[in-house]
Length: 218
Image (cartoon, rainbow, N blue to C red):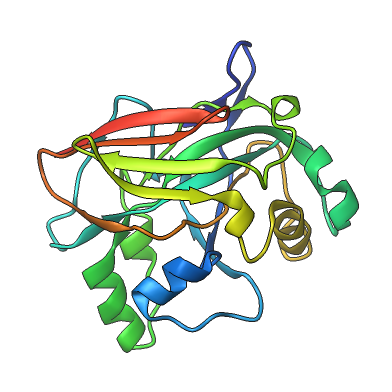
């Protein structure tokens, strides 16, 4: 069973649902040539896709175009349903950093056919995830930097202030569809700068104050 840990404590949550938000940064939407959605785009990853700091990404043999997407991750600490935006942050136990890995070639082909793209997003090792800092350490989740480097070269450098749908709104919206439970993880979308990974790469993602993550690619 995969767990999410709170830095500086013995607290660990068995990971439940991993709810992910797509197309939540305008520049990222433009770089992929997508349309801006009216509502948050939701997909999910299984808990089995999680690896931790120091882990190894294994690109499946059915893809030749695996992309990195650095994101602010939210850890749910309290059960909630139909949560008002004003109360949304109170549900969180912590904040961390995640890398949403996407098999871009597989995703594009499945989207073209109108088919679900779970296998492009939920494969084993598709969700590198840091430990979480306690929620009270983050004064404003819309004032954080997201950075990702591959082999020491900076590729992503964005701000959570650029989210189309901010954290409070995402939690409230998701809770209207899914009952949020302790151990659920929410990935909030990626800023511009996504790009390919290949075997032998080293990937470092960081949100200063919220966490960091270093993984290799096999």
